Amino acid sequence: MFEPRPAPIVPAAASRRLVPLPAPNALAEPGKGALWLAAHFPSLPLDALLPRACQGRAAVVVTAPDDPRRTVVACNERAARQGIAPGMGLNAALARVPGLRVEERRPAAEAALLGRLGRWALQFTPVVSLEPPGAVLAEVRGSLDLFGGATALVRRTLAGLSAHGLTASIALAPMPRAALWLARAGLATTVTRTDALPGLAARLPLACLHWPEDTVATLAGLGIASVADLVRLPRTRFAARFGPRLLDELDEGFGRRPAPRRRYVVPERFDERVELPAAAEDAALLEPALEHGLARLGAFLNARASGIRLLRVDLLHRARAPTRLSLALARMAGDAAGLRLLLRERLGRCRLESPVDALRLRSGVLLPLRIRDPELFERGRGADPEATARLLDLLRARFGHDAVFSVQPVAEHRPERAFRIAEPGLADGLPVPRPTARTARPLWMLAEPQPLDGWDGTLVTGPERIETGWWDGHDVRRDYYVALSRAGVRLWIFRERPPGQRWFLHGVFG
Image 1 (tube, rainbow, N blue to C red):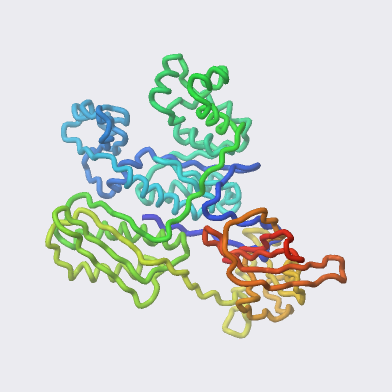
Image 2: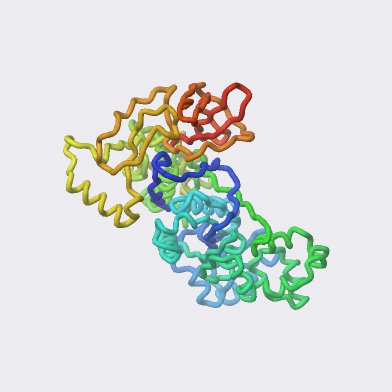
């Protein structure tokens, strides 16, 4: 469904300034200068059940099964054109459209779709957070230059979602909760300063807060119609009546209180279900749903820079055990293109004993994708000097002259001094030594080692002792180790000597 194209990453060893990479499950905390993009998906309950291409010409609504009134929580455009809207009771909706198609909400399907949206958002920034049941947050301040500014980024996001049959309301703000309020209220705006948020409070209805219905009803009975009305209430009385948690949320939205977010972590294996719009009795009718699932798989692998050698596809029947198809690949697949042809061949030979209601796609273990990376500026091997020069000119015109450079090794044992910045294409540096298990160096090096006051991980190799530099006043005495964090990130850490001194993080392996 989604095909993220991650932005290129500049190796940290070649960067003049670098901060440590956070662990994948770390909290993403809004800091100074942060800008959060919130994408709210009002039709997500429907899109999770029936993609737009499968809705046909019917007017479709989704209701909550545990709601006595069977309130409409989402509807498609055809139903909306006939006067149906979320919040309407099902009986009223059926009175307007007697032939209405009614689907029951499936929270598991919504969570799966929200996870796919989170994976898709990783092409714009590594800091993504899910806001169930229907929103995604992304901290995009560091990505604005790459995508041409906030307006261009929003356009690209909306275009990508539209290409997959999804619509969203998008807003940007310094605080994640404020961005959520704006997006839920349908205010497609970009707010770059926290002190500008109070000026928009009058345009934010209470519904955008997603507070409990009884709380909103009580506030409405008191004449409170907007967030602006809400913030004028006495804080002490408000907290006493409605609890401190809601007051904390208001403070988070206006930047008076930190609001850390749990970062989205991409699952380790692909396992998703694709519903069919109607039971299929012919294997040929499964191809659109299979295409849908393979697109999701391709996006999943792309986001992880991974491949697979095993894929299982279960054809799910209502009245019998699943029909199982299994692909064991001779070579690793990193996208859906090759899998698509193989599965079509398998389906062509498959005879269905019972109608199929849904597909389930499950991958084997993920394998790191081996991408051949030839030397960009190699000479004497067929490289075109003119094409290389044109590429350098294009890159420097787009990103600035100083943004494009090469890194050359220096005869120095101290890691932070073992390279220098040079013009691209120059080959006057030292030969690059072949790394061994004991001398491997991470691709991402921190400009300055960061103290490790405490961490939960495992030492993999080491120590590699480095003692040098006493003659110039910058001597180092360190024992380096390759370590594995609890989140599975390989780190390059060292301990000051003599033993018992502090630990530091110096790099992260790619």
